[in-house]
Length: 316
Image 1 (cartoon, rainbow, N blue to C red):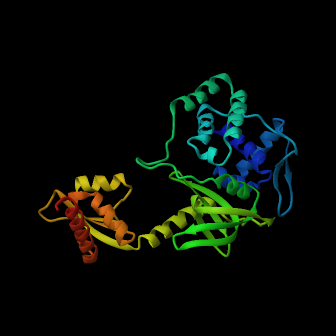
Image 2 (cartoon, one colour; image 1 turned 60 degrees about the vertical axis):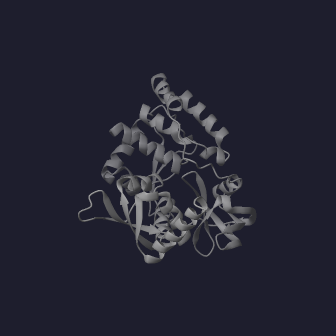
Image 3 (spheres, helix red, strand yellow; image 1 turned 135 degrees about the horizontal axis):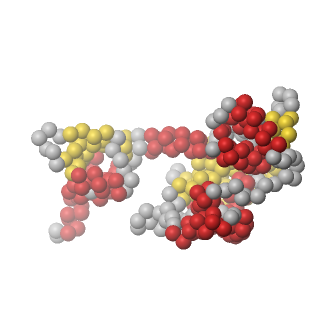
């Protein structure tokens, strides 16, 4: 445990350049006194680490100092070997860099750890797409990612659901969700753009100042919640069989609430968040006879009309 903590301090300072004792203590979940003792031990072991005093003080490694990755254990090495799973790095133009990084990593590891880490690429493959769904092309992903890395402002032509728009924005971050790439961009506010829907882009002059308090994971989680509330602001009540509930799970739809039906143990009433009548009708028809719309009445009538049209196609 202690050796792992010492290595974590060393790698953190090497990656970030400067950290205060309080920051290190919070990240490693120990006391500041423990951090000071650990730093003293690293220094006694020959690691060129020194303290900076003052309000902005902290710990820093001597400029140019680098450590090798010989402290990685087998599980940590496996995690690093998983960093390029799927086609994500290929989309960003980083496949060659990944191959080179893996070669350097393998060369730095002890033989026993190296052989265990190598098993990952032979025994694990990630396919991030659901059944019957092909990968959507996003040819501008590389250019957008480069703008994100360099804190560049860009101008995009974007095909939104309301129609084409043009917008100048700061390229803040990229997110991969279920095989699709999204850009988090800042104009007046932070917004999310599906990269496959960006028709063209140009890099603007000058760089932007990145917000120091921005956390991409936190922003994405909060944005997803608000987006789902917005896009699925309406609710429908369905009576479904167990098979119907399983079909809903297959397409990633989970009920908001479930209610038992008196004297009918084979069915359950559920509430679903729904988006748009036409799309909801298609999803309900996918369930076939395993579901019945209870409410609202407008949705029930819409399903009835669609079933009548469908029957007319087969019974002429």
